[in-house]
Length: 176
Ligand SMILES: [Cu+2]
Image (cartoon, rainbow, N blue to C red; front, side, top):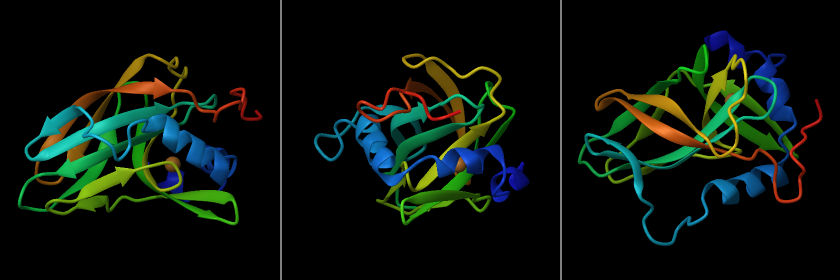
């Protein structure tokens, strides 16, 4: 599983290279409509960790990216160490780097820390979850069950809304 994201020629990497920066920004605003304003409603909670604004982007091709934020309201640090979903035989945490308009991603098996009082952000163009090997992409507007695993707080399952994978006016075709 770990090798999939490490391989630049893998399906995930091919998908990432089509994600230009403008697209990523459009995606971000689509995924987080009320960003920064009033506190969004929790999508899930486990211990002192509150998951807000989850979104799944599932273009054709079998891979889907998971974005969300985790707020740690406790006094102790924790770490997102993995994810899983019934619709995907493989899932892992990834980092994206965007340089000169090109995105590449790598698996992050060490996970992502979220310190006390901090917010862990999984966003387009940054850290994210990746579901791979999806047989048939979920429809926009439906929800997909995803389980997040934290080092200390344990696992929590949430329903993640599937959002469109193109920016405004993008037409939804990513060039297959
Ligand atoms: Cu990825």
